[in-house]
Image 1 (cartoon, rainbow, N blue to C red):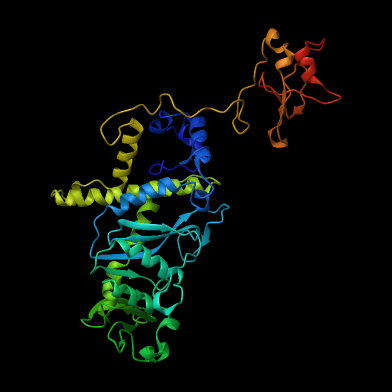
Image 2: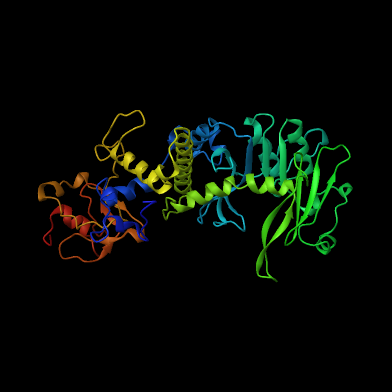
Length: 442
């Protein structure tokens, strides 16, 4: 469904637009039933202590995907950024991040390689501030997230992040752990001792101008670079030199010009886009579903994230095997092949099982008011006359149905638990009693 998208999900089963790969796997009603009752935990087995985790409803799946990410090889350069799980319904986990393609949803902090491979992640549940060390001040949200995500990195790794995370204290802590940190930084977080020029002063010097200030202990370098506007970066690894040139568009001349670029900007641009690249690949063939349940959206998002990671690992294996780029499967082909394999019921160990056979999921008793069903035929007379086993079941107003007593066409919310049909049960219209007692009007 993610590679063959329809605006209406029922079109996969409609005759003019029927997709055999979907429609032959299971019926439309069964698909909606499974998706509406999709869970990864048994609510009865969850303790009160486990429910303190705001992600307890999807925790087993999240940990399963995360364990696979943690097994991947750590590259020498990684980046940390925010990723959004799109969701516009109601949940206390929902955040709003302006500037993102999907600004509303669950926030996910991701550690990724420059190629987009997810190495670790942490779904945001609220402020979880760690101890700030000797200074005695608690870390900010960004600092805490970075320090937790870099725990699996080897010394000597270069970590890149944006200004949401970068502080002078964070760069010091990373350097103390043997990690190199580089990121854009806000103006008010640059130490006063750096004495960098203001944005107006730097703009007068022209595009491509850069100024670097190194702290007295030579631990952190702060660089200001004038592009279309001033960009501030802090790093414990890179400075201005060796600088190079890059192409930038100039509006006045309507042409591209060469602009001098510091080494820290070049390294940042080359290694920072891993999370955005992963986001873009997920967005190409996202498993979409209109639902009010944040759990379903989260489950589908991590399915898509796993598929992207699997494709990137396939690319690495193909390159090592000497397969040329034209012979590799594109992401569309890979995800379609993955879907067909799962529909055929072939597991990773080679064993097969039927996806359309018996299931451990029990169908609910009685009619589902959300589904369109045929009119129920009344039970034979001997069964319906055993009035001692017939009890009414009340339904809310939105689930009312037509009375099944012959001759009555009124809407009612009373259902016979045994006969599974709706009958009026009112002082002026007692169809329930007349139907089961075999009155003269039946």
